[in-house]
Image (spheres, rainbow, N blue to C red):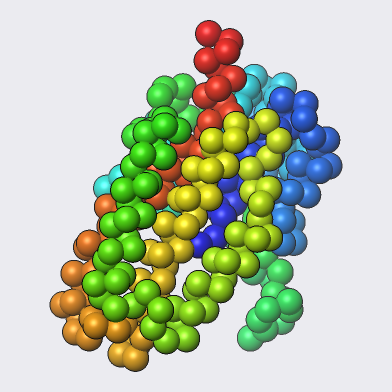
Length: 271
C-alpha cells in the first residue's frame, strides 16, 4: 500500500491521453516511471508485444473510452467484472486495468533483468501487460469518491488508534523508515494523478496512501521480535493483522475510486 500500483499509473496517464490532455510520449514516460520498459502482449491485431505508445493508440481505435483500475485480493474481487479467466489472472497479479468500451483488460507481469545477485540500480524491471477479453459490466465493490472519503476518515482514526494501542506508531528503525518513505513519497509524488482528475480524487488518493502507510508501519513493525512494540507473541501479531484487514480493504477501495473517477465523471457528463 505504500507504493503506487502500476495499474494506477497506466489508468491515470492513459485516461489523460484519451482525453487529449497529454502527449502519447509523456503518457508512456509517466506510466513506465522507474521501470526499464513496458510492453503490451495480446492486443488484437498485434502478433508480438508492442510499446505503450502504440498500445494506447490501438486501444483507442478498438473503442476504449477510459481506463479503470482493479486491485483484487483473495475474497475481494475489487474492480473486476469477469470473466473468471481474467479475474484469476488479475488476482494473481493483485492488480489490473480495464479498458471501458473495448472489452479488454490488461494484467501486468514483471521481470527483473540484471547481473545475478545484483540489486538497486543494477536491476532493471521490465513489465509485460497481458491483454485479455473482459465483460462490459459494472466493476465489483467500487465506491463513489464521496463514500470513499467518508470511509477513509474513519479508517484513519481506526488505524491510528490501533497503532497507539499496540505501541508501534513510533517504535524502532523499521517504523521510522516506513514513516520516512511515506513522507518522501508524499512530497515527491504530488502529481500521482494525471491531468483531468477532479481535486477530490487527489485528496482521496493522498488519504488512502496515508492510511496505507500506517498499515505498512504496523505490518513491518510486527515481524522480527524487536520491532513490534507491545505485540510480542505470534497470536498478538495475528490479531493485529486481523484488526488491520478492514482498514486495508477501505484504503484499497478508495484507491480504486480515485483512479476510476475520471472515467466515472466523463460518463456522467455524457449521460
